[in-house]
Image 1: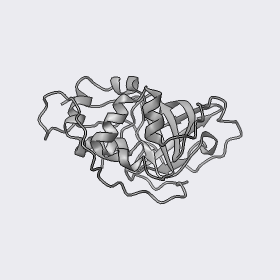
Image 2: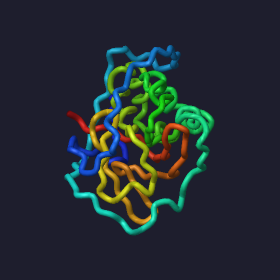
Image 3: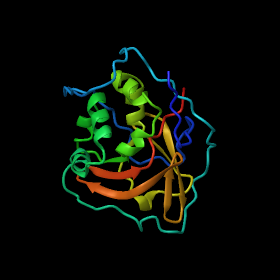
Image 4: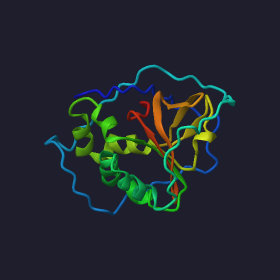
Length: 213
């Protein structure tokens, strides 16, 4: 099977040195029925993930540079799902959220922070990988989608170099901040602070993969 290799450097299963204040949300399975067109891959197929490199536990460092110069449009209207659908650049992410049941959670009160890969980011996965993931959404796809969500609201200005935050998936992500450039597990945030009624979206250039057990 194809191995997913992304430009992101996966964070280890380490205790967050600066975790978000809100406890990790429990993600209830969705009752929504979604029809997703996928390749004819057996449902039992899983995609092996190879993570490269390690991230050592780092004490958060407060940066003096601003991180809000390249912010997105602050709408403040509609949920994260509503804003993502209206944007039009997240069709694959929306399909994955629907398939894994996280869509209904992100319609809830929150607050949530979603690091949203664009359709182009998903297209950079190895050939056939997305189809295999979508064929078994309750497997690895669920872990991957939840790894992009933090159960609290983190604006760009809240992110500091070395900060780690625990995701809904249960494992932490790590941030690198240098001036106006912010990366999460090595994937650059290309649009910041797209606000919704129940949280905020940051657009990222690559899909990030949770570290193996």
